[in-house]
Image 1 (tube, rainbow, N blue to C red):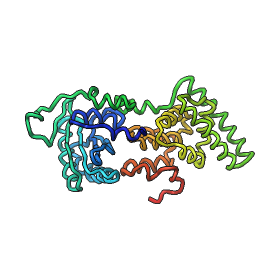
Image 2 (tube, rainbow, N blue to C red; image 1 turned 60 degrees about the vertical axis):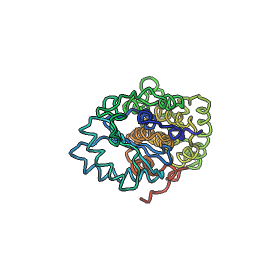
Image 3 (tube, helix red, strand yellow; image 1 turned 180 degrees about the horizontal axis):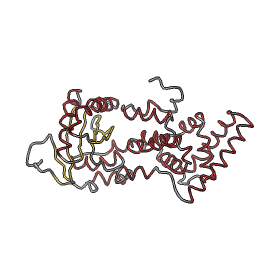
Image 4 (cartoon, rainbow, N blue to C red; image 1 turned 90 degrees about the horizontal axis):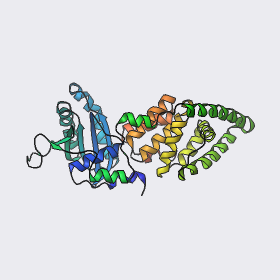
Length: 334
């Protein structure tokens, strides 16, 4: 079973089960957030998170956010959704009250609308005090059958977005110094390869580097510093990047490969590996990891086209298949 199929295998018997699943769908435990979970014939097919809007700004927020959510749900043919607001009632309630009718008007069946405040959840759609007391029901977000299932499946929720950012942050200390030195050597080597055989020689070297480096991660090994430096320097050529992109699919070790290369790449050449990490995470249904990897790519190169393309697709709920297999080499038409 592919990594990106896992979220849809979660069987959700109750709101507490759903709430325990959310961190595994997003990759971290949300706070002050609105989470939209889309279902296509009872299988979770999409989950997205946004910051809770200020109650005074709900109208402006809704104008942008509602069409985005509707587009995202339609792109995966979701027929039903569950909305979850995380935070205090005075902030959550106005946002969910505004969003609910927009989704219903778009023909989306809302199975439930929930608020999570201090480890208690409250349903806005259940008015039976026996199953839905006014002050909400306690639940443990870290301990339920769903959470255990997700942990067993290898989807570990990080505590929050800060931890997620740290997981793709550049390495520091002596390891960083070693990569800096190796990258300097790799740049000299690249200049020599180009001088001897032009761009065709660089593309050949790139293909060879991809073929040499990828298998290491399949066998739970990691690339040596010189290998990381050589591949990341070669990836600055878009043709080499597209060879690497085409070699990447949904195997779990591909996520490990791009995470390691993104962390270890010299920041000056991090745009390509971080963009490929973002794409891999996005295709695996890990939207939050994709977002922090894009931040890393755009820090390295604010104009990196592939990062902007993935960013736009994420924001508009376009499915990853639309960009599959390195199809973004030409100028985007939109």
